[in-house]
Length: 456
Ligand code: ATP
Image (cartoon, rainbow, N blue to C red; front, side, top):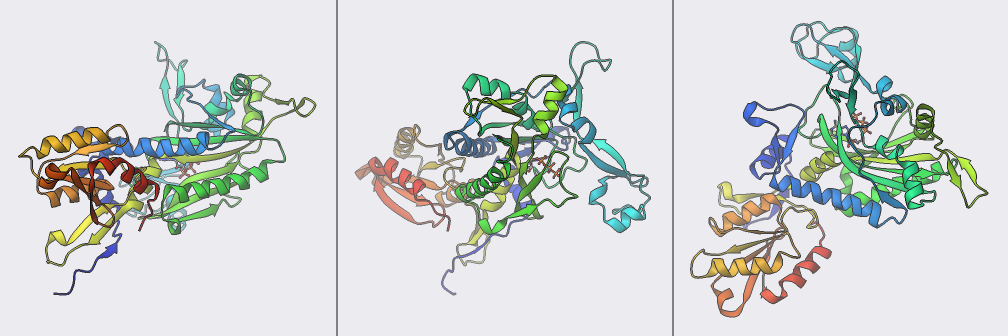
């Protein structure tokens, strides 16, 4: 037998991510007991922790670390004129084709060109319908009568809630240009094709920041925000060789955009958009001024009360999509033994400790002889500072594997020696190294390990 060689192999596929996400309580199919609801997913105990941590990381980056950015939480339901002004009623459409034979529906821009030209279904070869426009906004009805007079939309993006509050925020918080408004919240799109798990869904969450600048300064701040967003992913601790820029060509630019870049990640299904950084010019505020009849000019008190409609640079990220990225990026399969059985490999989620749903798991070696009580007591002492878990069932090796799959960076094991001298074992997820320290040193040691964390 050769010496046990520790090799790593990310081995990630979307099937493995979906399966681990369900097995460990990250993401469940919506309404599963009724056969599932396509386009919607539920975040389980681990998933909601991970999602909240990503949102908090983004929020801190935007608001706490940028003095000139403030937050907002606007309503999902907005006046329907908002969406006329924004251009969504007219332009927020996908080209759609149906197969007359197999009844499948496709986005025309995703059907291979030759097949679209021949009107041939990419799945069954049947005849395709003509291409028609399909608006992605969900409509619902507000008020007691359902005669169309109460038409209202579920917002398809969070950005418009920011634009229509920009004047309120300038006035109430005395914001001076340049400044930004950040928001995290739900958005809804009636996507034709929802596949690849939580990558593209009908209900999702966005993290958007809109930065208001003087006309003419937009290109400078566009570059500034491109740079800032790149650094964000470095700080998040993802593998930067899997991140790249994609600039929108003339045919790709949205109706509002002067310039646009996507940050893409190499998902198991290929390079896909993670977030957009857009120079939106003065399109949005001009339109809202026109449609609302309200003066949305900024009055520059430091500059002879000069009046202008600000330009907007936006950074628009998907929170749920970023969560999928984090799951894919953290996933690793590692060979840890050479016995020729299932235990040779472990699956480990290499989350940054700041993002891991559980930071420290406390495990008594045995339930009996007072070890469980001692472990509970140690956990109690860590709760205030860390997200903890307590796990006493099964062999210790199995428990480590379970926490590897959840991505718990530190396991603290309590054994008979702990009873004697107050020491415990800390096991590090990534290196599987174990060190023995006094329980009184745990807090400081874990804090340092989190601060110094580097992915191997
Ligand atoms: P696409 O062209 O892929 O439909 P988009 O370019 O319209 O997407 P934006 O409107 O720029 O996307 O949305 C900003 C971000 O919101 C995206 O980068 C993505 O992270 C997220 N997002 C958009 N649509 C969805 C969706 N259906 N499901 C999950 N996240 C989404």
